[in-house]
Amino acid sequence: MRIIVENDYHSMSKKAALMVASQITLKPDSNLGLATGGTPLAMYDKLIEMFREDEVDFNEVKSFNLDEYCGLEADHPNSYHYYMYDNFFKEINIKKENIHIPNGKADDFDRECRDYEETIKKAGGIDLQILGIGSNGHIGFNEPAESLNVATEVVNLTEETIKANSRYFESKDNVPKKAISMGMATILKADRIILLARGKNKAEAIKKTVNGKISTQEPASLLQTHPQVTIIIDQEAASLINKKDLSADCHFEICK
Ligand code: F6R
Image: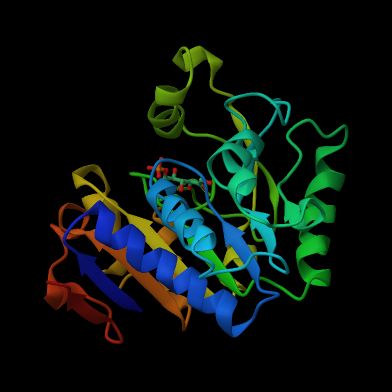
């Protein structure tokens, strides 16, 4: 695990965007796993800027989003479909048929989840997965629990997540209570993973992600089992990391 502590949100987003662009340069038909939420927004902005400058080309890229709320139409302003088109896809040259996001309005959710998993497999798996992290340690919508899902499934959102995400909705009551989420194995099968976090409210979750112990109550801690994880965080999110507690193979660097 490599932990990179950047000065601020701007520099961490730029670093993440450069890594995504490098992945696409190395393998133009890369399969990218993508996240929504507040954290990756500046990374998407930087990638759009690089696309406009001809520094990255999404023509052959395939994308697979981590999750989608159950019950929201793709054109609902709070759906992750809408978020992805509005914040990223409409500004780049990714082909529509190469974009994959779980269907929150599927007639048969079990089938939707199975098909989503199969689509990722048929595409050859995810080359680079981008993750955010919940303040409760969730990745995707894999919430802390006694056991975690292996593959893509419908999940119940915790009160904490509903509250955190209510900032985008009219009220907390409007936040869907269920979502389709890639499972832990779906995520951990990616060749490379980049996890982004900013701000004090992520500091505790980041500490537990890297502290050398694994627990399903801290889903992000399972990333310690993956050989190619890069965590890019700002100083606030890094503020509770105690270098002595890091797992043995952690590489920790502070950028000036
Ligand atoms: C989003 C996702 C979530 C978010 C997490 C952090 O697709 O899967 O795990 O990454 O909730 O959200 P923000 O970035 O809004 O703090």
